Length: 450
Image (cartoon, rainbow, N blue to C red; front, side, top):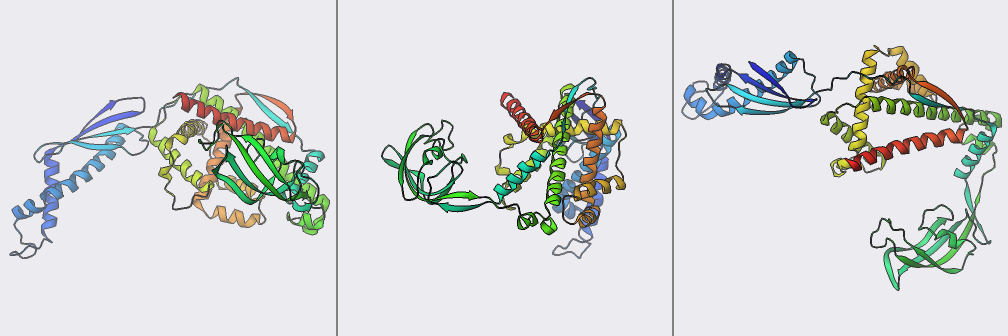
C-alpha cells in the first residue's frame, strides 16, 4: 500500500492511497469461491457451477464489495500510520477502480487543529459580590404573590395593571383586516402584549363601554402588509378585573413545599434559593469573561464537521424548547440561525479540551457524586436524584464534562486580575442577562458581516 498526504488547509488533508491490483484480484477471487459454494443455477448442481459463469454473473458485485471493504480498512490504517486525528467522516472516492490495475482512491478529511495555547495572563475580570438582603427576599415574595394572584371583577374604571375582557375589530381605513378581531379577549393593561399605544387607551374604561382606539403598527411589525400602517379598533369592554394578591399565610407558604407554613423557614428557603441563583449568575458572568478572553487570543480554525454536529444539536434543542414535537423535521430550520453560535461553542470546546489536557485535569466518581449531590439539593428527593444520575453512564459523562469545564475555567482564572465589584441581587442577575445578550448579539453581528 502506498500513501501520500497533501495538506490543503490548516485542518484539511487529502490522502491518496494505492493498493496493488494483485491484492484486490486475490480478494475478489476468494469472495467468488465462497459465493460459488452456494450458487444455484439451472443445469448445475449446487457448488458445481463453473467459475467462469460465477465470475460473469457475480464478478462486479464481488469486486464492489471487496473494494468498499478495502477502502475502509486501508483508510483507517493510513490515518493511524500518518498520525492523523480526523474530525468527522471523510469523503472517500475511488479514482482508479479497474480490474487488473492498482486500486487508487482519495480520502478528503478534516482534522482537529493543532493548538498552542496563548496565555490570557493579565486579563481583567470583574467578579460580582452579592449579598441577598431582607429587602430582596421581600421583593421575591411579592413576585411570588403576583405569580399566584387571582382576578376580581370590579366596577371601577380600568387602571394600569388591571385586566380587561374585550371584543375588538380592527380596520385599515374602512376595511377590516385579517387577524384584527377577537371576542372575549383578556388583556392586562401595561403588559405590552398588544400593539404599542393600544393598552394605554383602555385606561379609564368601564365595563359596558365602547371605545375607538387609534394606533400605528410598528415599521418592523411581523405582518408585512400591516407594518407602518395606521389602524382603528372598535372595542367593547365587557369586564374590568383587578389583581387580587394572596395573603402570605400558611396555605400560601405550603404551596412552595414548606411544611407547616412557617414564615421563617419560608424566608430562609427563599434566601437560600436566591443565593444559589446569584452564585450561578456570578459564576456564569466570570466564566464568560474568561472564555471571551481565551477565544480572543486563540483564533483557531474550526472543523466544519464539528460545527455541523453542534448545529444539529442546537436545532434539536430548539425544537424541543418550542414544543415542535418529536416528529418535527429539524432540517426545516435554517442552518444560518445556529451556525455562528455553534462555531463559537466548538471553538471554546476545543480550547478547553486543550486546557484540560495541558493541566492533566480529571474528575473521579467521588467528584461526580459530590457534584450530583449539589445539583440534587434543588429537588424534593435528593437521594433519588443522586441514585438516578450515578446509575446512568451518559448522565455521569455529562456531569464529568461540566466538572472538567469548571476546573479548566478555574485554572485560566489564575492568570487573570480579578476585581470584586459590589452588586445587588437584581444587578447581578441583570448583568448576567446583559452579558448573555451581548454575546448573542456579537455572534449575530459576526454572522451578518461574514
